[in-house]
Length: 441
Image (cartoon, rainbow, N blue to C red):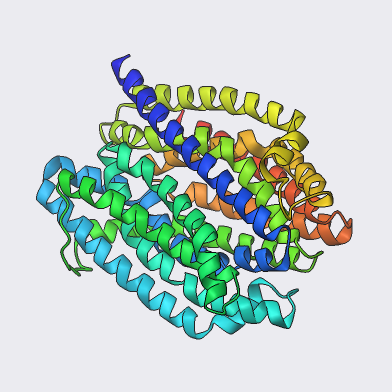
């Protein structure tokens, strides 16, 4: 019982700061909507995230979300100095790999821009290349802060880890309020000011987490040893998850490419609806998954099946209930929610109605998408990274096929993209749940 109380206190802390992060994110989106509306410029801004996100997901997120924490904890219990050495080794290697990848894409930014937004005009593509090159600095910084955050997560030091997303959004807000005027004063396109905000948003979480990581025992050291067993185990475990996240990033690029061929502002409208839909997913689903993962990893390491299953299914049940209630309320009041958050300045009329309708379709997949992180981490804790990835790749392929059919075959536009996302999410969770019960119960 004491362990469950500790888990839910950690979940509550993460949920609270996730909620604060989402509030600042919605404030950020409101400012962007007011300044730019559903415009070609904002379409360029959101498209510019696709390539940096692809690099980050491919080389960093796959490792820390599935492989690093179990391996770190395994060594931390036996030899702390070796655990820190593995961390330093992995951090150095990840930083260098991301640096090289970003440098290559900086050179090939023009073909990358044409790939992610084939429906853009020549002027939009030119602006996208400039903004993309600027924002390629962000995954280099995030590679450091994310690994430090995963150390804090593994040691259940959640405070600084939970604060990081809040400061990321504050950085972008500062970019919108002060970076845009600065860009105009320099004779640049105002969207470049938003890019400066993204870089500030990448730096602030790093600065927040460094003191806590150092207090926990981490020290920055340049170590490269690819023969180390712990490092090699991280790489081996992360490969399936990396493939899955790479497929997810490809899905996001395809969705963006489809939206770029629709009416001006379609990417922005879809992004705003997605951001609202992910509030319950992040505040409840991801927070619970983050809090429960170290415990699931510990139970798996101790071969305590009873505690593992009890903690997992308790997390699933409470998350489904909480998110389900939120999803119903958000479906009922979808238009009013969009009006309150976004209806200001340049964002009016049809943009509000379209965003609200897309949000309503997203609600049919919100519960499933909130449960997927928990189910996936159950597999990761058992050091099974292959099953969730295969399920994810199948669901992503389904999402892409449905998106193409709904958007072009049935002419449903962005509504088709939202519905495809919800259907694929439900299929993803159901497959994970069924496969877990068959194999581990």
